[in-house]
Length: 283
Image 1 (cartoon, rainbow, N blue to C red):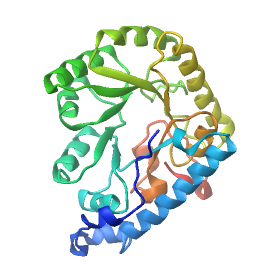
Image 2: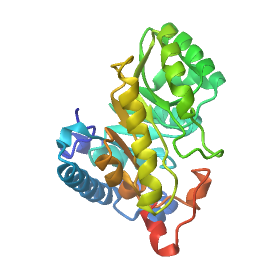
Image 3: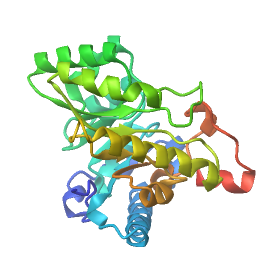
Image 4: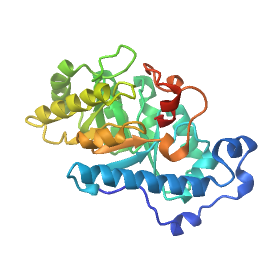
């Protein structure tokens, strides 16, 4: 599996924006040299991913690091690109669409990882490289129709609610087999694997079962659906644990770009608050 970041900055230097592009708010949030900070943080995350793979007896190439850029302004994302990042993971479609238009000159892949309403499928089809939160056949049908109009296929991950929290989207584990069977009716969608959001807790004993369940569901699905190989799971607070349990994609934001404004609960429904000393692990 190919890594999706490029730590060599030579190519990124061609796209380095002028420092004047940063607003005072940007500097307050990201510091005076975000590119340098992002590059250093990215290197640290890469090292931790490699170490987690080694501990699990896995090759580094088995795990893809997907940087999550939600809430980053477009001008700051240019600096992320210059730091070697070539994929942008976004939760909110409208935000992603706006930024993709502003950054159309960059050779970047846009990955939508948040819930999507079926009436927004036409917008995703215009620019997204992949979608990590498929959880309804109504949405599958609309995405298939829109991708056919665009003349291309869309890699998708099926979201499963492994924590069984009502505040989260995703299929129930029991609904997954029938859902995967039905996806065969939508040839423009290319299922890659399963995705989940683990319970939001600093306690590994609460988080690990979510990852273990997703892996068991993937293994069972492969009997009838051999293309279902991927496990998109793990974020800034738990990606090393996810790698130990078989993750093939980890979605990491705050460990690379710093803490987002406001509470994590604003971005992730169902968040179980951690003690103040542990909140810095963020997602």
